[in-house]
Image (tube, rainbow, N blue to C red):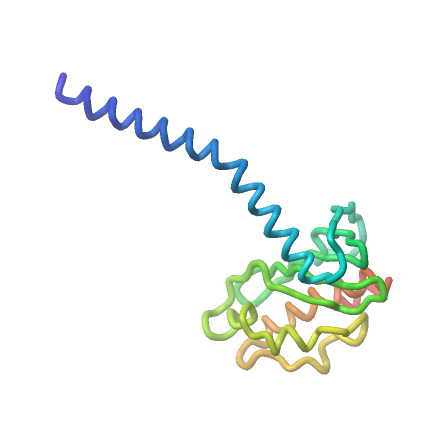
Length: 171
């Protein structure tokens, strides 16, 4: 029985140490995530340096968060892709023009829809569009990823519609 006491005690000490480290680093991880989010939003909405989370109780179910910046908004949207949910951050200036978009979460098919995270030409085509200009009829979809392309377009449309006040049913 005594031969089990030392290994068991060592295991308990290691578990306590790891738990303590995890709890101690949680605050640092949260601060790093917030700093990354702020830097991302500043890149999406140039000339804005601070962002305030606003309450959103609108009709558009694609919109999950609104961050007001100095020169417009960063809108977080979640739409249904081919495989799962697609989470975007979309910068929209005060006039309603899209200033940037980034895919933050995506679990689409590798080599097809997953390219939406790295295909800069696909995302760049939305820059400067506003409201009905981004509806999707003139969007060059990712080859083999029509559903993913439509889901991203839908999210960007929702973001632009929020700022311009356009009909949310178009989102």
